[in-house]
Amino acid sequence: MTKTKVIVCSNSGIDYVKHPYDIEVFRSIVQYSENEKYDDYTEISAETFYNRLVTDKESFPHTAYVTPGHMIEVFEKAKKDGYDSALVIVIAKPLSGLYNAVELYSKEVEDFKVTVYDSNCLAYPEALMAIEAARMFNEDKSLEEVLKRLDFIKTHNHMIFAVDTLEYLIKNGRLSRVAGMFANMLSIRPILDLDENGKVRTLEKVRTAKAARKRLAQMFVEEIEGKDVMPFILHANASKEILDELRAMVNEKHQFAEIPDYLLTPVVGSHTGPGTVCLGYIIKE
Image (cartoon, rainbow, N blue to C red):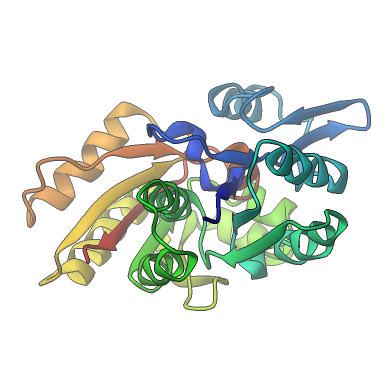
């Protein structure tokens, strides 16, 4: 019987989601300088990362995906541990070159089949894909059955983001400096999402961060009307007051017993900046 190792990239934020499974993580790298680099989560936590963004404006982080050498080491170790294949779930292809890198370097390990799966998303939905894959493999489900489940999650989730500052979108080239300067002068805050192809797009532009959060909740409530969903909040170290505010605005229309919140991993947060909040959902199957 085929034994498949589940691997997911750290953009999923799976380290901040409780689960009972042995899932390997391809950790992205947070780099402040040539001599200051950290593996996501194991060497720098989200809380530490976001606090530094706020207190140390001069040291701007850059990010990179896991090194080819480490990928190969993980595949070789999995093979040595008795696995004959791996399922690697990665961030949406338009957001990273990781998909192509895994496809390329997985060929370095003989007699070990690697399936690379484009999640078309990031954060919690990607983490859930890995958790569901591990659960199903533990129940002796086939790769085809697992991929069918992942396809459902891929096509039945949506996340809407409101950023608290435009600084990091500008620094990372997601917004031009000129457009960003005028937007900041007018206190403009874009509301963003990932489209059906996994690309970042602007849905609306709202004045002030508080107004953006209110509009975010309105859009979310309108979108989930009539749907049976699992809601969640993602955030870049947002305050408890803001998280509670989002829950309250959603529950004015939908009385969810729980709306869990999860931290955005530093690699994602380096693009969105501290204080970013997201309302998302996955439709129940």
